[in-house]
Image 1 (cartoon, rainbow, N blue to C red):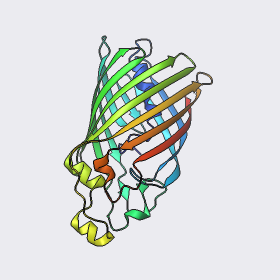
Image 2: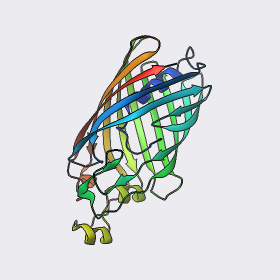
Image 3: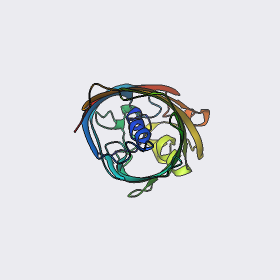
Image 4: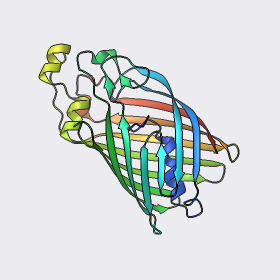
Length: 260
């Protein structure tokens, strides 16, 4: 199940491949990891309700190609100066108009209609300026349904990284085009008639900031664990949407993995 929906999902777990790939000593390793993760997060972006979810963790790599339960299937190209290009094909679970235990959704959205599940492709360009700092720009584009384009610009600091522990702090600016914003935060006339919410038409551009703190610990060469905490802020333009009930939200994720 490959998802490319909202940034907080598994955000901390995905620092590990980026950091490792920039290191020549690990770039050629072929690895495969499996595990399970639990996340306590808002039911959808802007919800004032939290829910707990369990989901599998899969991360595998063979040369430049990889599979990742959050990013999807992809490949990356690395340069000696720290520049890299990453291309992935993933799957968005969409959003339900009622409470769901396996994807975003809440009863407060009844009458809004479901956001369809859809395949996405993502292109990221980044630069590992030093072993402890990384910048990246990313675009996520729809493939099987016209749901708009999302963009991300992130800055990551890694104050601690050794064979046992890695700590990373990432700050990400979130952007969307008009189509993406309308689907996720807008209320059309028909939706207004069904729900009683006022119509709302957001414009494209910057809509939020996400900050994540991650700690990864390796017990031995096989067993490892990751803990992460995320803070998500929506700007005033999006926060004025009648389906946004909380402008500031938190999420917490924990995972345990086994590397073969």
